[in-house]
Image (cartoon, rainbow, N blue to C red; front, side):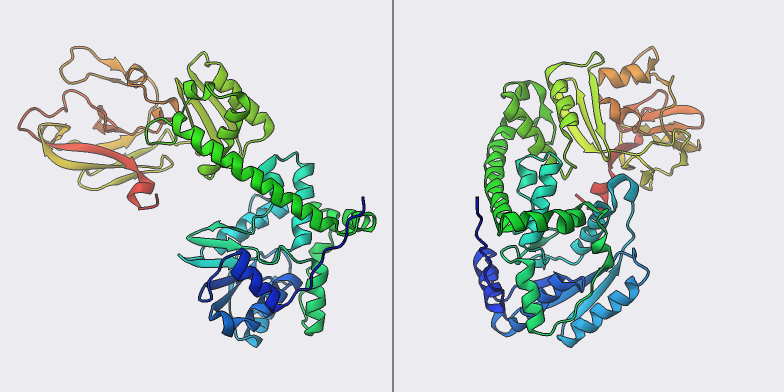
Length: 459
């Protein structure tokens, strides 16, 4: 099949049509641009500056210095100089690229870059990146080679929510060849990142070794692959609409947990689609096919202990009784933890994501008189703890109390224990042990356990 080259020339006017048409940006939109100083972002910035008066828009450049090249500081200085020549403010951000061995250099750098760019996008603001048709085609091929599904093959969306605003890619209709022609016509001098020639990196291998051969045989292949990405994006949207309907009947209460019984009523393909959607909606990294298969098994067969766990880097998915829950993986707790506590002051429990506080009340909770002058400390479960609940004659093992109360296994080790001297006085905000339980009309402290994120206003 002969694919015709459908390139159309790039110009500020062509860019303006994309901004106003496909992206729907108003003339007074506040625009930020991720500016590397390379060909693509320099062309985008230069063309945007030619539109400043008709667009009536403010433009700010943000340069991310990954610190991966010995001359990265010089590149940052050069970017500031280029922007100054165009009358644009350039903010330089230095980031540390972590988890290179776990994620790979490209993925780790991308994660660090976007996390820092997000800090610069406020409500109503738009961050522009300079990805073009060739980048989109490379992404489609990379996703195919990874065995991605429809959402992966949709590659990079032209516009998406980002931080408090949006992220847009206005050059996805133009080829690198067109951008280079524009740059040469306007005498632009851009930075050439030598790492872009390193064919040990997957994207560079495709760009330098594979795509020239593909384009020689099928001219315009990049446009056709980008078109496939648009088709996939439409299909992904339809799948998301279906999942949004299914999740209403499967969600437990107002939280994020799903009912296993309700999930079982869905045919396996719809159940898989819903689970993927459910994880994405929580900002959780997508599971591999293997992990998704394991989650499907969890929904079909109840674990012997009534608790099952599927884990991949950064994520835990639990099944407990009839509920499926997911959240970012938590680090190990320090079971030797022992913190002094004044009930009049809130206490954050390190590593648990919880905060313990108290409210002065009467007739419930911890008796102030019975605590007396005892030193209060907060600890975590060691195993073997017992508590005699108020009004009962016998002690009960803490393990049994937690099981009977239906507290999920992953929460049991995080529940703070309050000690008066060497005596267990209270178990989180659930139980108070004799002899520290307040009687009627007795001044007391009511214990309250809350998420530290909620306390700090992060949710």
